Length: 168
Image (spheres, rainbow, N blue to C red):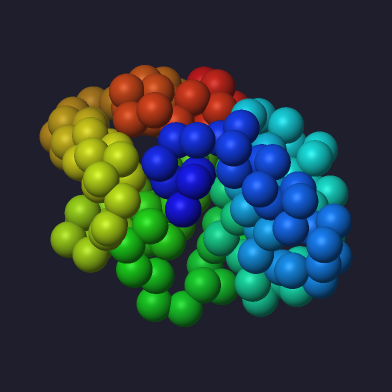
């Protein structure tokens, strides 16, 4: 997949052509939505997701909600993914590194993402976040604000800048 190889511009051109040939190509709409999300263009990503049945777009929809800082909605959307594995587990875990969420559940899902993932970037990000969570959990006298500041830094260290900015 062009997106996985880091060819964002090529992928966007490919998916845009695919949509013009066949507007019902859900994979093309999903690819365009993901590319727009990677470019921080949430409005365009949302527009592309409207063309896709919800059961096919839960993961991307949840990721978009995380980027918008809609943590509770993101958690609900991502929790509806049954038995998340690999990349799905990584993104579902991100929903648990937010205010009011269960950090232990995030740790469990990150472990799953590390053990079952197939995307080296997400596996590395999951490892970084998991290590930071371990350090934060060991601090006994910490306020919620301090905890989320540290988690925001952990997200930044893992490359999740948009979510980190909304959490801080």
